Image (tube, rainbow, N blue to C red; front, side, top):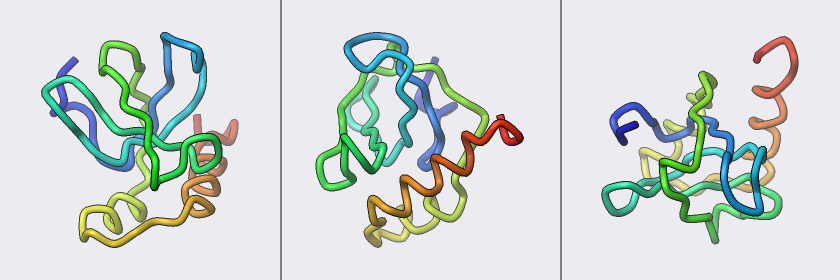
Length: 94
């Protein structure tokens, strides 16, 4: 898997570590093989989780509104992230 396939605002699922099966949103990239993840609850946007891309599964859902906000450099609230993850993970969207 390469970083080109993963986009800002994309939802991912952790497949390794203490947070296995946890859903996160990608809010940034660091180093060649790491992404910054947040869920708006346990991991806030102010303190994102650094995770190796080999330890995540990329989901098809992308939060385009949050992605646009992040790409412009503006801050996104944890509440917006939680709401977006909840709505995109609803059974009718998966």
